[in-house]
Image (cartoon, rainbow, N blue to C red; front, side):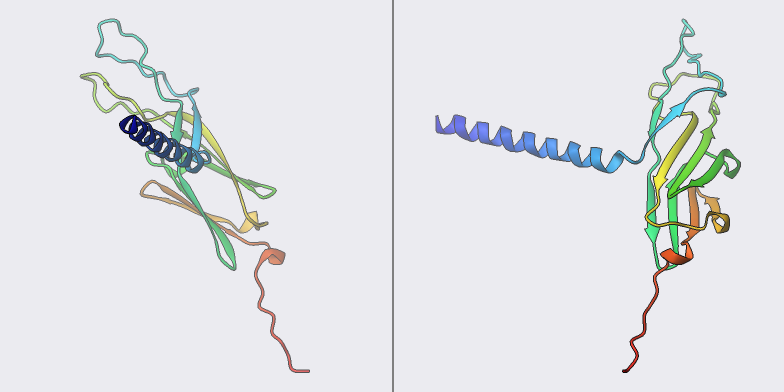
Length: 168
């Protein structure tokens, strides 16, 4: 029976390890998981099959991002490969940055067929909570190498101030 107890203990440890890994993945990816709504983009067909059936397109994808705050500004970096700067629409509402866009489908080849399709296409939007009030009218954005970078100056009352102590 001792061997059976060891086996049970080993399986419990393995299960807890896998469960913890999934929990961490879910917690880290929750904010980055973005829904893509196929709409204006033409549907994608698998022309490599004799049936010519519809190939299911992914409708969820990760748009990973970072939010950095320093004394004067908030910087949001969003990884969004395969788009052009014209594909984005940015807006600040209250203390939330809203990023909208559309990723259009471009077929790589006219021959063959897809065996794996994990890229999502269509319109999307992400709401990114900002840690402090910002001056949206002074924001600046750039898009380079698949990374959208938005700099949002902090509102005057949200900026850090150094207080000097005077002698009495």
